[in-house]
Amino acid sequence: MTVTFYKYQGTGNDFIIVDNRLQQIDKNNTKRIEELCDRRFGIGANGFILLENDKIADFKMVYYNADGKESSMCGNGGRCIAAFAKYLGIISSTAEFEAIDGLHKARINGDIVYLQMQNVETIEAYKDHTFLDTGSPHHVELVSQIEAFDVKQNGAKIRYGQPYGRAGSNVNFVEQLSNDRFAVRTYERGVEDETLSCGTGVTAVALAMHKGAKTNSDEVSLKTQGGELKVKFEEDKDGYKNIWLIGPAQQVFKGEIEW
Image (tube, rainbow, N blue to C red; front, side):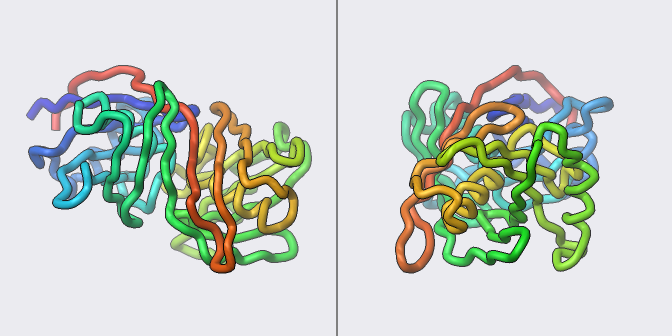
Protein backbone atom coordinates (compact mmCIF):
# COMPACT_ATOMS: atom_id res chain seq x y z
CA MET A 1 0.00 0.00 0.00
CA THR A 2 1.31 3.45 -0.96
CA VAL A 3 0.97 6.15 1.70
CA THR A 4 1.73 9.87 1.44
CA PHE A 5 3.94 11.23 4.23
CA TYR A 6 4.95 14.75 5.19
CA LYS A 7 8.22 15.82 6.78
CA TYR A 8 7.94 18.62 9.34
CA GLN A 9 10.44 20.28 11.65
CA GLY A 10 10.18 22.55 14.66
CA THR A 11 13.53 24.14 15.56
CA GLY A 12 15.34 21.14 14.09
CA ASN A 13 13.22 18.53 15.90
CA ASP A 14 11.97 16.62 12.85
CA PHE A 15 9.02 14.33 12.28
CA ILE A 16 7.38 12.11 9.70
CA ILE A 17 3.64 12.86 9.76
CA VAL A 18 0.90 10.80 8.12
CA ASP A 19 -2.80 11.58 7.76
CA ASN A 20 -4.32 8.41 9.22
CA ARG A 21 -7.96 9.48 9.41
CA LEU A 22 -8.87 6.50 7.21
CA GLN A 23 -6.95 4.13 9.53
CA GLN A 24 -4.69 2.79 6.78
CA ILE A 25 -1.59 2.47 8.96
CA ASP A 26 -0.97 -0.71 10.95
CA LYS A 27 0.11 0.81 14.26
CA ASN A 28 1.43 -2.54 15.49
CA ASN A 29 4.18 -2.46 12.84
CA THR A 30 6.66 -0.64 15.06
CA LYS A 31 9.59 -2.10 13.11
CA ARG A 32 8.45 -0.19 10.00
CA ILE A 33 8.22 3.04 12.00
CA GLU A 34 11.76 2.52 13.30
CA GLU A 35 13.01 1.85 9.74
CA LEU A 36 11.42 5.02 8.39
CA CYS A 37 12.95 7.14 11.18
CA ASP A 38 16.45 5.80 10.45
CA ARG A 39 18.59 8.56 8.92
CA ARG A 40 20.65 6.19 6.77
CA PHE A 41 18.17 3.54 5.68
CA GLY A 42 14.89 5.48 5.92
CA ILE A 43 13.54 9.01 5.65
CA GLY A 44 15.13 10.10 8.90
CA ALA A 45 13.31 11.69 11.84
CA ASN A 46 13.26 12.08 15.61
CA GLY A 47 9.69 10.77 15.64
CA PHE A 48 6.69 9.49 13.69
CA ILE A 49 3.24 11.07 14.10
CA LEU A 50 -0.21 9.96 13.01
CA LEU A 51 -3.08 12.43 12.68
CA GLU A 52 -6.37 10.66 13.37
CA ASN A 53 -10.03 11.49 13.91
CA ASP A 54 -11.27 12.17 17.45
CA LYS A 55 -14.86 12.06 18.72
CA ILE A 56 -14.58 15.35 20.62
CA ALA A 57 -11.49 17.31 19.53
CA ASP A 58 -10.48 18.54 16.07
CA PHE A 59 -8.09 15.59 15.72
CA LYS A 60 -5.96 13.11 17.64
CA MET A 61 -2.16 12.95 17.77
CA VAL A 62 -0.46 9.54 18.06
CA TYR A 63 3.28 9.87 18.62
CA TYR A 64 6.11 7.33 18.24
CA ASN A 65 9.77 7.82 19.10
CA ALA A 66 12.45 6.98 16.55
CA ASP A 67 12.77 3.54 18.14
CA GLY A 68 9.26 2.72 16.90
CA LYS A 69 7.63 2.74 20.33
CA GLU A 70 4.56 4.82 21.12
CA SER A 71 5.71 7.48 23.55
CA SER A 72 4.70 10.26 25.89
CA MET A 73 3.88 13.79 24.75
CA CYS A 74 6.16 15.58 22.28
CA GLY A 75 5.87 19.36 22.41
CA ASN A 76 7.53 20.19 19.10
CA GLY A 77 5.61 17.33 17.51
CA GLY A 78 2.41 18.87 18.87
CA ARG A 79 3.28 22.19 17.25
CA CYS A 80 4.08 20.45 13.96
CA ILE A 81 0.86 18.43 13.85
CA ALA A 82 -1.14 21.60 14.49
CA ALA A 83 0.55 23.19 11.46
CA PHE A 84 -0.17 19.99 9.47
CA ALA A 85 -3.85 20.08 10.46
CA LYS A 86 -4.04 23.64 9.13
CA TYR A 87 -2.37 22.52 5.90
CA LEU A 88 -5.01 19.78 5.51
CA GLY A 89 -7.82 22.29 6.11
CA ILE A 90 -9.00 20.58 9.30
CA ILE A 91 -8.50 23.81 11.26
CA SER A 92 -7.94 27.46 10.45
CA SER A 93 -5.94 29.33 13.09
CA THR A 94 -6.97 27.58 16.32
CA ALA A 95 -7.22 23.94 17.34
CA GLU A 96 -7.98 21.57 20.16
CA PHE A 97 -6.53 18.09 19.85
CA GLU A 98 -6.20 14.92 21.88
CA ALA A 99 -2.75 13.54 22.76
CA ILE A 100 -1.54 10.82 25.08
CA ASP A 101 -1.49 13.25 28.03
CA GLY A 102 -4.91 14.79 27.34
CA LEU A 103 -6.34 17.74 25.44
CA HIS A 104 -4.13 20.51 24.04
CA LYS A 105 -5.05 23.85 22.55
CA ALA A 106 -3.05 25.43 19.75
CA ARG A 107 -3.12 28.62 17.73
CA ILE A 108 -1.19 29.50 14.59
CA ASN A 109 0.16 32.81 13.36
CA GLY A 110 2.14 32.33 10.14
CA ASP A 111 4.95 29.85 10.84
CA ILE A 112 4.66 30.37 14.60
CA VAL A 113 2.64 27.83 16.55
CA TYR A 114 1.51 28.36 20.15
CA LEU A 115 0.87 25.08 21.98
CA GLN A 116 -0.76 24.95 25.38
CA MET A 117 0.88 22.36 27.62
CA GLN A 118 -0.62 20.55 30.59
CA ASN A 119 -0.51 22.14 34.05
CA VAL A 120 2.48 21.16 36.20
CA GLU A 121 1.83 20.74 39.91
CA THR A 122 4.90 18.80 41.06
CA ILE A 123 8.51 19.91 40.67
CA GLU A 124 11.16 17.94 42.54
CA ALA A 125 14.20 20.09 43.38
CA TYR A 126 17.45 18.40 44.39
CA LYS A 127 20.94 19.70 45.13
CA ASP A 128 22.29 19.30 41.58
CA HIS A 129 19.18 18.88 39.42
CA THR A 130 15.42 19.28 39.11
CA PHE A 131 12.90 16.68 37.96
CA LEU A 132 9.42 17.32 36.57
CA ASP A 133 6.93 15.96 34.04
CA THR A 134 5.69 18.31 31.31
CA GLY A 135 3.93 15.58 29.34
CA SER A 136 7.20 13.65 29.33
CA PRO A 137 9.65 13.17 32.24
CA HIS A 138 12.59 15.58 32.36
CA HIS A 139 15.80 15.84 34.35
CA VAL A 140 17.10 19.44 34.33
CA GLU A 141 20.70 20.23 35.28
CA LEU A 142 22.75 23.42 35.12
CA VAL A 143 26.21 23.19 33.52
CA SER A 144 28.90 25.60 32.34
CA GLN A 145 30.40 25.87 28.84
CA ILE A 146 27.39 24.10 27.37
CA GLU A 147 28.65 24.26 23.76
CA ALA A 148 31.60 22.01 24.65
CA PHE A 149 29.56 19.70 26.88
CA ASP A 150 29.34 16.00 25.93
CA VAL A 151 25.56 15.67 25.90
CA LYS A 152 25.38 12.12 24.55
CA GLN A 153 27.78 10.55 27.04
CA ASN A 154 26.56 12.42 30.11
CA GLY A 155 22.92 12.26 29.07
CA ALA A 156 22.99 8.49 28.56
CA LYS A 157 24.59 7.99 31.97
CA ILE A 158 21.76 9.91 33.68
CA ARG A 159 18.98 8.54 31.46
CA TYR A 160 19.76 4.92 32.31
CA GLY A 161 20.99 5.55 35.87
CA GLN A 162 19.21 5.73 39.18
CA PRO A 163 16.58 6.75 40.07
CA TYR A 164 15.21 6.55 36.52
CA GLY A 165 16.12 2.95 35.67
CA ARG A 166 14.67 1.17 32.66
CA ALA A 167 11.82 3.65 32.07
CA GLY A 168 14.39 6.44 31.88
CA SER A 169 14.11 10.19 31.68
CA ASN A 170 14.91 12.83 29.11
CA VAL A 171 17.90 14.87 30.23
CA ASN A 172 18.33 18.63 29.74
CA PHE A 173 21.60 20.47 30.28
CA VAL A 174 21.21 24.20 30.82
CA GLU A 175 23.38 27.31 30.89
CA GLN A 176 21.97 30.67 31.95
CA LEU A 177 22.60 33.46 29.40
CA SER A 178 20.63 36.29 31.04
CA ASN A 179 17.77 36.76 33.50
CA ASP A 180 15.18 35.33 31.13
CA ARG A 181 17.23 33.45 28.52
CA PHE A 182 18.83 30.01 28.76
CA ALA A 183 20.78 27.74 26.43
CA VAL A 184 19.47 24.16 26.41
CA ARG A 185 20.80 20.87 25.03
CA THR A 186 18.69 17.73 25.41
CA TYR A 187 19.32 14.00 25.40
CA GLU A 188 16.06 12.29 24.44
CA ARG A 189 15.07 8.80 25.46
CA GLY A 190 13.69 6.80 22.53
CA VAL A 191 16.07 8.66 20.23
CA GLU A 192 18.97 7.78 22.56
CA ASP A 193 20.97 10.78 21.43
CA GLU A 194 20.96 14.55 21.52
CA THR A 195 18.21 16.19 19.47
CA LEU A 196 18.43 19.72 18.12
CA SER A 197 15.44 20.74 20.20
CA CYS A 198 12.86 19.28 22.60
CA GLY A 199 9.57 21.06 23.27
CA THR A 200 8.63 19.36 26.54
CA GLY A 201 12.30 19.76 27.50
CA VAL A 202 12.47 23.53 27.10
CA THR A 203 9.13 23.77 28.90
CA ALA A 204 10.62 21.82 31.79
CA VAL A 205 13.70 24.05 31.80
CA ALA A 206 11.66 27.27 31.88
CA LEU A 207 9.58 26.06 34.83
CA ALA A 208 12.57 24.59 36.69
CA MET A 209 14.57 27.81 36.32
CA HIS A 210 11.62 29.87 37.58
CA LYS A 211 10.97 27.50 40.47
CA GLY A 212 14.66 27.61 41.40
CA ALA A 213 14.69 31.44 41.35
CA LYS A 214 17.11 31.61 38.43
CA THR A 215 14.61 33.89 36.70
CA ASN A 216 11.68 36.01 37.87
CA SER A 217 10.16 36.29 34.40
CA ASP A 218 6.98 34.48 33.35
CA GLU A 219 8.17 34.45 29.72
CA VAL A 220 11.45 32.62 29.14
CA SER A 221 13.50 32.39 25.95
CA LEU A 222 15.30 29.12 25.23
CA LYS A 223 18.20 28.83 22.82
CA THR A 224 18.39 25.28 21.42
CA GLN A 225 20.77 23.83 18.85
CA GLY A 226 17.96 24.12 16.30
CA GLY A 227 16.71 27.62 17.06
CA GLU A 228 14.81 29.80 19.51
CA LEU A 229 11.71 28.86 21.51
CA LYS A 230 9.71 30.70 24.14
CA VAL A 231 7.70 29.43 27.10
CA LYS A 232 5.05 31.54 28.85
CA PHE A 233 3.31 30.49 32.05
CA GLU A 234 1.48 31.53 35.20
CA GLU A 235 2.36 30.42 38.72
CA ASP A 236 -0.25 29.89 41.41
CA LYS A 237 -0.52 28.06 44.74
CA ASP A 238 -0.98 24.72 42.95
CA GLY A 239 2.03 25.05 40.64
CA TYR A 240 2.15 26.25 37.04
CA LYS A 241 -0.75 26.72 34.64
CA ASN A 242 -1.58 28.38 31.31
CA ILE A 243 1.75 27.13 29.96
CA TRP A 244 2.43 27.90 26.28
CA LEU A 245 5.26 26.58 24.12
CA ILE A 246 5.91 29.00 21.26
CA GLY A 247 8.03 28.64 18.14
CA PRO A 248 8.17 27.89 14.41
CA ALA A 249 6.89 24.74 12.72
CA GLN A 250 7.47 24.16 9.01
CA GLN A 251 6.72 21.59 6.35
CA VAL A 252 9.98 20.51 4.69
CA PHE A 253 8.80 18.12 1.98
CA LYS A 254 6.35 15.33 1.22
CA GLY A 255 6.68 11.97 -0.49
CA GLU A 256 5.37 8.43 -0.70
CA ILE A 257 6.21 5.27 1.22
CA GLU A 258 5.14 1.66 0.95
CA TRP A 259 3.46 0.30 4.05
